[in-house]
Image (cartoon, rainbow, N blue to C red; front, side, top):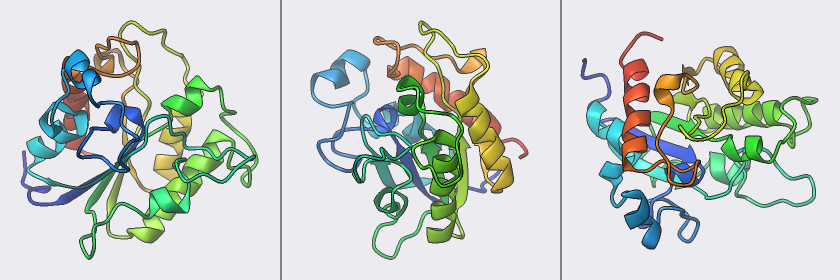
Length: 220
């Protein structure tokens, strides 16, 4: 392993799988809070997938912007800043003058669960692919020096996998088009343990972190 990421700032853009009470923002939007911390064995940053990845690479957490229930896509009926392609979410990954060196994006599970259209016209931000592309482009505009890691959507061990998965395929395609690092979590090796078939427990977090690290340490 090299020291490429030692001391670097990492920010996270995610949904409930990346939340943690007392660490992620905004407050009150966490899944891993109160009794769920004990149920899932996720108590501290060191128990999360992103915390394990950052620690293993010698980095530092800058911002974890994770909103439980959030989608990438925008509902056409209202303007609410929890969706990933919003200006609020894509512009909230710095702290004062400190800017992220790496942005890890794990979003799309809720779009898939809600059966949001995977494809659509470029202007339709309620379709997954154009919304994901707009989100990544905003991140690149706001943080031009940051590496952007686009993580595909993982599946719990006990949940039914979608194969082929058009949402993860769109993430891979856009990662390549927009010069981002694609982290593939669709393989069986990435299937994680989860008490509710969706949210990783402590062991599930470790499984995801291991797959992410194996790819992050390799060549693009």
